[in-house]
Length: 426
Image (tube, rainbow, N blue to C red; front, top):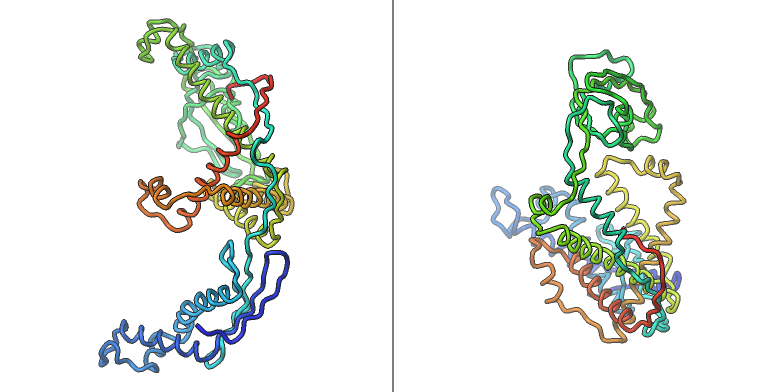
């Protein structure tokens, strides 16, 4: 494709603005191509495919749809040609704006192009890092045994008042202001004293016996994610049907054999110790990675373009909003519950975006220097079980593999100093 004009201006380091003009001849060629394609695919009574006049196509399809299809063909070609002419390699899809396109006129548009920033690699081999000495203690094993006891506990009916941790079978009604009691009840089995419920029915079950009736009022927080409940007051009526008390078993060889399929208590302890060691190793790997990343950020210098940080931060915000919507939350109410303003949260996202982008470019620079690569076959093998894989997914997996290999290099060449710290299984 021949372009009439390509003007380039650097807005900030690694951020370029291209003003592109596509001549009328190229626009007409693309328009004719669209008409030929439509002429072959349209079905118009009285006309054979490929023989439909352009004027009739315009009436059947509409000028706006033809315009959009011409732009869909022209813009990527023009952008690709402009980037090649200016020898620019964008790290993200260029943002197009100020598109001017009228019949019989050149196509004009502006593209914001962000290129990869230069990375000044410092020390990344032989980094001095600290690693806490992680050891499974007898206390940790004992705590794990108590978890097993709680998992194997049985619940038996009791006539005593409900204590914290008891299971309570209850019928209840939640009545909004102005609503009268009905014969319709909800049933549930709740853990007495459990927190985090709204209304807090489990907390109101403490001290209640089988057959007890009760009621209480509750006002929802004004920042509740459900706007229909925010700030509203409800009355909760309930009837205790039964109280079930947790009975913790004594761990014996016989119980372990029956319930867990293990030979003895000693076998259970060994199994728990292996699980705790595995858990500690996962915690240690995560801590090692975080420490290595922070060391790389200190040792290597890279300035990420503001425009790229803003785009990535906006993507993180969009992902947060989508995640909250899936849980029935609104961003504004979630932020209010967190005690943050939108501006404060956006500032946090910009910091996170800048950190991630810096690490990405540092990893890529180390990989290039060390000739660390990832093949397409390796990527596709990891995604072999996926039915549909798009280019974005392929790129993400490729980048994750590359980053992991770079981290493996950094971690295996590091000088580790072991330190004594109190550790928990977590």
